[in-house]
Image (cartoon, rainbow over all chains, first blue to last red; front, top):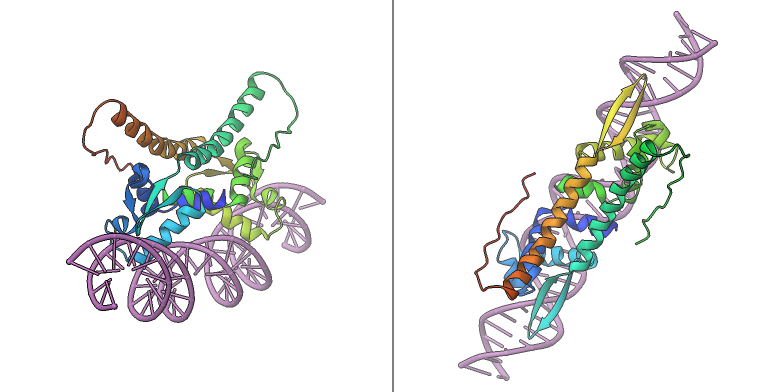
Length: 109
Length: 109
DNA sequence: GTAACGTACAACCAAATGGTTGTAGATGGG
DNA sequence: CCCATCTACAACCATTTGGTTGTACGTTAC
């Protein structure tokens, strides 16, 4: 989860995710799109890969990068969990008066 | 946006967000919950605050921390935008054959 | 007024980040 | 084979992060 959000916390990497949705860009093709060295782009891709946000697929001597849909969904679900905490709070206010105890701690993913 | 996701990329800070949903915890009360110094917790709160994820409200000599619901929603919307990119891709495959051009770049926020 | 509490902020340090360059291993084409 | 391309990885550097301690300031309680 740390890796996931950390990977998302960089504008270059978020842009990469958008570009790699179609999974047709090699690393060097991707690198051509940014004003930085190939190695720097490689590092960004590695960060995305370790976060599970993209996968690499070999085609000849190229390595095609593709955004992993499920990983983005996972991040969204984490934020959903946070929002549901508000809902629980509202429920409590409108409905009843139970004590606190909503310690689900869904952070192990 | 960078600050937003960066703030979320730390388990301690995510835990803080959960705890501060009800907005009834002072910084020192919060600090008591973690195995680190008060100053360290203060820094975490500052990171969350600069990301817009929490606000502070003074009550006497205490400073109550409260999670900002809208900021979390904002992060979710960013991930929604990513997912809609996949939908656009599917649309293209099933429907027509238009060229690429979905450069909305909703990154300025 | 003074002590205790809660907060803010600066200085400092180890480790990680994000960038660079350089080198080396695979792969494909003439 | 030889060369160009694509990739991988290490070494290095400036900056940021995440933690510490110490000090100063405002507020509450006695």
